[in-house]
Image (cartoon, rainbow, N blue to C red; front, side, top):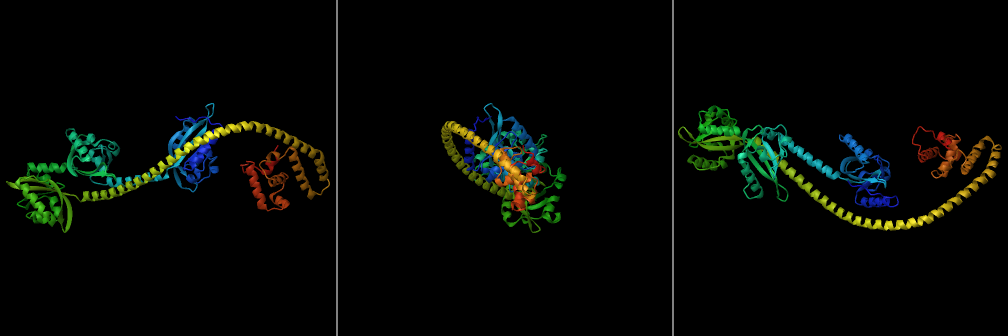
Length: 581
């Protein structure tokens, strides 16, 4: 733990305040507080950061500047413990209230100040305004929260993994699919060791790394089995895209996955026996049709719903009549190749027409034997929900990337500015060292001169005391007796002035009840008003006696209370003055 060296009043404090002045030019608030947390020094930077002058800050407790929120109680406990520990703190972040009422985020660091005996005297520290960075972080967090809301309403599994395969984001559907209750059980875990079966894990990790480095073609669509938390094996249909920064560096993969276990089981069941799984086909959530000689020979209930016509009208149609013109050629070619036994893609996406509207669907085709002859069995899966989610994700991805680009540019500018500030600070530190050396040299010279000066001042003080005593003696022997005689000669209306004169003479001679100790703080007019107040005159009477306005007397009374440190409004000024001894 860093501990401050001892600083003497003639050296260390001056150096620290000089540092504070240099730091103020960099916009850094340098302060000093006692062991109770009350500020005893502040440089001018506090004016730019919090709107207060150094004079307004000195005497304030640090908590008077804090904003009360849910963290306040914890911060107070931390502050009490830290001030008592004598260890200081590093980069403590909290919110302060600006003089104009706005919120300012502050990053604070401090170190303890000890005297020569090792006793804790207080703390010195520096604070920085990080409001801009704070707001940027909040804005990014709001964007993330908004994106998470969209993700959690999706009906498909959505996840983001980094370049190492660690899960950094997953939606509610993803948790359900993997068999977990909360995202916290998944975030940060490696997808390959969390959910990929051991028998294919090694190959998938290898393909993943090669795809990210460009050594292997990146697959936007593929099927892969997973293992759930309770050990069940599921087949997931993945559609994925690479996440890159503005320089093209791959940051990870955004993927949407759909559990096609039931669909695959249905497909395999149909492949083995049409009759045995007829009920399963009829109740499938996907449309299933059988095409033979380019004509639909069979359609389940879901397929009939898809096309919006009766089963009677659907069965017997040429299948190309059910799709838009642009898909007919490729569907015919793939159908012919599949029937002939040639290898063609099993799954692809097209659109079908239903009552004049187009519906995006996923087509999975396989060659089967139907009534003793080759045919194509096709599973039709509705993609409308997934397309809507993907479109929403694309829009939010673009927004998020734009936010990241803007924040990155802002951070670059901030870093460049910080680098310049660091350079300037280092230069000032060098200058400060020179100043400190020069200050030490001059301090030594001043100390030598102080010895002679003290001797001169002592001689002057003795002479002043001697002259004062002689004046007091002359007043007591010559003037005061005359005033006492005058007191018996003047009428009642003039006795007030005589009393004032007597009080003034008593004060000059240092008599009991004297205001002499207060001369260093009060003006002549204020001493005159104090004398009238002590003699029981009201504000109006004083104003009339001195030929000044009542408001002027009231203002003088306020200033007198302030200079005499009378903070309690319940203390009577006349009583206070008459009790001075």
